[in-house]
Length: 301
Ligand code: CP
Ligand code: NVA
Image 1 (cartoon, rainbow, N blue to C red):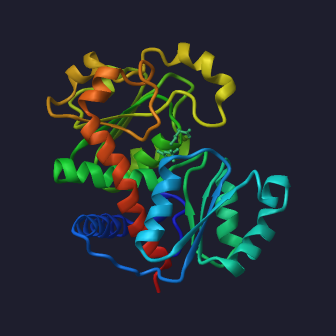
Image 2: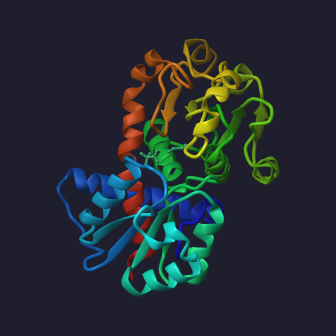
């Protein structure tokens, strides 16, 4: 595996290998076993948007693997002043051994990979969030024992998270249902692919999507970059919330997941979040282990 630009680029077998390695690295870290597989290597972390989990888990992950991480805010880089991505890619390829980038356009991530000569990892774009969904699949497998055949229901905005959950879930043989208001559906091409390659529904009816779900997932109503729409979205998304009524139609042992940060009282109620905090914070922890697996797959010789 050279890059992680989006989950669509990975085969089911490659996803399974990442999840297996992530499980192994998690077990070994808990038991004090270290692997300095990336000794002497440096990963650049380019952030054009805020982050808590992605930044910290990549920095700690590189440290755990014996390498270095370099935090590069676009506020300080020349890319933030308009230096073309083609040039940035070629320059950074001369210093670094890999780049993780969080930005707006998916095209920018694809261009870094096209013009650079080092592994590129997508740390979130407006289109997708592959690192998050690898950690999510790892967490579901940990809690449920298996992915294939389980029903994953996403409630809320058809955003970057939804796009990656659809691809990751369908590739792993899960049934995927999405409930979102009309006009806020996930990417149309991805929905077409999901219909052709697995069991998928997209509806504006929350209860239809959540019925018999094994996993209920949500994310913020307004993503980074949509701050100006936040107030209007509160009205549009009002009923697209994980709450006790929605939980009641899912399986009695259904998991609840959230990529975080969460807005209590908006996409999820305080009581549901706190009742499922164990799953949600396992999910956050697993960012570290899943990304270490990705780093090893992309950057180790
Ligand atoms: N879930 C996630 O990517 O969190 P951050 O925005 O804090 O990195
Ligand atoms: N959809 C959210 C995810 C944050 C991890 C956003 O893009 O802001």
